[in-house]
Amino acid sequence: MAHHSAPTDMSAPFDKNHPFLAKLVDRRRLSSPASQKDTQHFSVSLSGSGLTYKCGDSLGVYPVNNPKAVDALLTAAGFSGNESITIPKDTSSMSLREALSKRLSLNAPTYKFVQCLHDRATDAGQKSDLASKLVEADAEKKKSWIEQREFVDLFTEYPSAKISAQELVVRYETNGRAREGVCSTYLADRARM
Image (cartoon, rainbow, N blue to C red; front, side, top):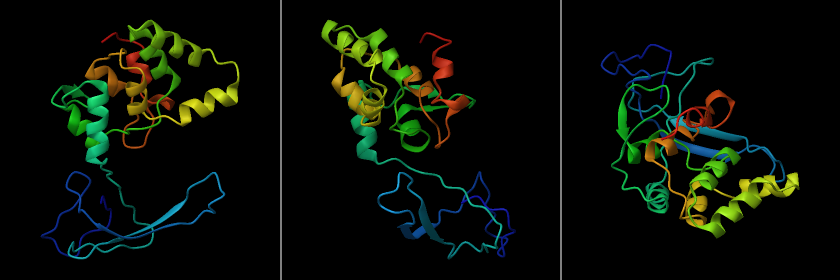
């Protein structure tokens, strides 16, 4: 938890680089089940941190992906997880497993990613199917198809399409934030991996 208020216990100097790992104590949906929006209320415990929270303070959330989901994506994409990658706009390298576990989103592929898979597919049937998805004239059908898939689904459905670990990373959304308005595709489109 990143925090702007001074801690009451100076032996606990928490900041964005040394966050306090608060426990989630309450989570409930605020929006109607029929709503397109999913607005949630979260409560966390600061117990044991020495931190106090005042109205106007902010906190940061550092999500961690489910290890089984990370393993499934690594397996489907043909990676061990030990591959060394660099996340765009980050200077340090890390393992692909660490990046997928702590830094990257595992869902919400884009049609630019589908185009990448099409370009790399070696099976004629898979390449043809991907091409048909890319040129689908019915906008609603096209939108529905991509929204129903995660990256693992695409690698499972189109196993002949192989990309490098680094290329996989630059085509992702990081920490819930799209890069340059779309999921990091801007780097992959400028450099062949």
